[in-house]
Length: 330
Image (cartoon, rainbow, N blue to C red; front, top):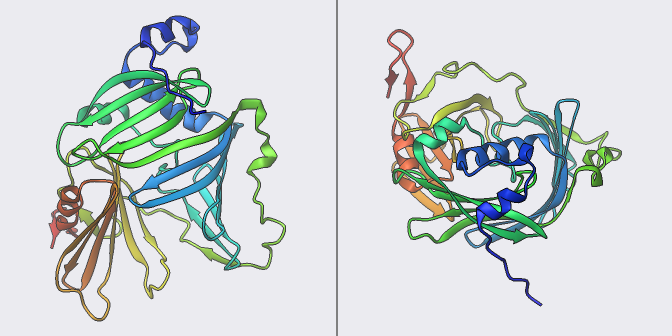
């Protein structure tokens, strides 16, 4: 029998909460709780991710102790893959290829950790409001509405479990309020129901002889790669900059990561390959936009969960960082 979601008044839910756990009716406070809970709670569950025509299922286990995050993400569809993370250090296991990739987490865009802040920057670019409280996985869940103030980002709908603040569902909406992307827990365990041993790699004992693919360990300082995004959409800030070793590339590729606290864009700059691309191109897949632009001897690629116009504005403003004047040279 199908279970119907029941919408409840926010005031009734808040009245039943202990004073220490009551976030009030300020949506920014609810957003702060969601961000903190994703980092500082212990939980394990199955997550379904739908984007465009694709559906993927994974299992995430997150344990917080001694001030550190320990996490394991297992893909349950397609090729076997597992990510084991301690804070920003990641080991990505690919058992079919017998490879371990040692990397750093660039952003926190693993559900339910979707909110990166700072919260004031999010409030500058989104209108925040509380929606209904619904029953999700047997728990009361508060919907938080984030509607963009411009056409360069998508609307977001986040559902936070009332007691802990942990996100149980999330949706990205297009310009016609259609769902472009969504995440949802289909089962969930919290707190003491999850043990520390569950975040250990399934492949730890058999991976001693696997090939290790190690990314450069140090993240350069802003501007040190020599590339800059001169005119990103309002609210997007540089949150990561590095040289990366990508498959099928002979030379390291520059990656610049920009975020407005919710949406994220990655800008890749690499030497032009043969045959050389001569024209710009834009593609969409659900909430993901891809923009490619030839720039002299280099190729710029922008990937982001943003409308195409935002990816295009970002890609067209990439240039060389001038040493003396500090202005981009294109």
